[in-house]
Structures are given as C-alpha cells and as structure tokens.
Length: 207
Image 1 (cartoon, rainbow, N blue to C red):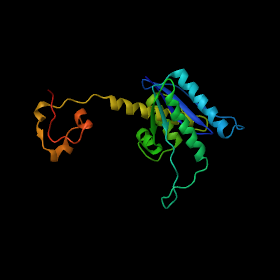
Image 2: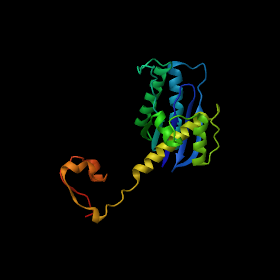
Image 3: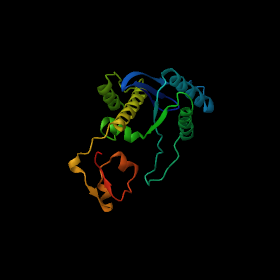
Image 4: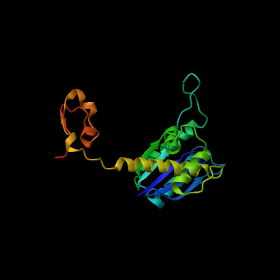
C-alpha cells in the first residue's frame, strides 16, 4: 500500500510517497512567480494529480490549515488564507477521482508532536526525526524542508494506519464477568464496546 503525504503551500508545496512504510520519493512543487490566483491553484492541483496518477496511493495525508489567533484568543485575518483554503479544498476534491485515495488530514501541532515528541519543533528537527525513521538524508533547509515535512506527515499517517489495523488482544476467560450498566464505561475497548457504549450488561469473553 502506498501513501501520499502533502505539506500544502501556495508558494512551496512538499509531497512524499511511502510504500508499506518505506520511503520511495519526494519533491517540492514551486509555481512560477507570474502565476497568481486561480492559475496558481490549478497549476498546483494538476501537479498533485500527476503524482496521484503515477503512484496510485491508497491514502492522501495532508496538513490541515490552522487559523492564527490574536492574544485575546480571537481569530484574525491571515495573509494568504483564502488561497490556502481553496488549495486544500482542491486537494480534498482530488479524492473524488481515481485512484480515490482516503483523506487523512493532520493538524500541524499533532503530527509534529507525534513524530518528534514535542509540540514545539524546528524544520531541522522534523528532518532529523524523519531521517532516523526512514534512513533519508533531509537537511530541513530551504531546499528540502517542505519535502521533509511532507514525508513526516506521510509517516505519521502510516503509523496511525498500522496502529488502527493492529489486531485486538483476546480477553482471557478468567477476566470474563457480567458488567452492570453503571460500570459499562470500564469495559475493554473491544469491537463490541467500540460499536456501542450503551450496553446494559456485557459479557466480554471469547465464545
């Protein structure tokens, strides 16, 4: 299974491909400076579409755009925000076309913390963490930090996928017991309890 990670940006857009959690390739899309507005958006989306056609990823992971806030916690205008909104909307729309990838949006602080271990991190630290995991040679400088970020996004999405697919450990028979409704919140997270937390009485043991 292959996965496309995107670090979206209307000036620089990083992308990266992993296959079965192994690094394949990456790059940075840089539109010509004379392209503005819709022309820039369409150029970027057409290049992302080319990557989708070539590598046929099953998952498209991208960094979600976050609004900046002022000191009083109120949302404020961000220069370039409308362009970013349109671009990310276009990325999401690409999931409607072959290879119909599953979308995996990731918040900036969340994926960075999951990869590096800290909410606050630099581009160089992200590149280092990616290199440690995948054996790549990113520097996190102006030339490759967007591709490094895209690879980090792809790696976190892959980790999330493999964690989700891990089989549930069987519940020992000795632990089987009737659980009253008042204690239903203490039930182990089996497939049964995930599908319904409103069980009045549950006997969670192998049949």
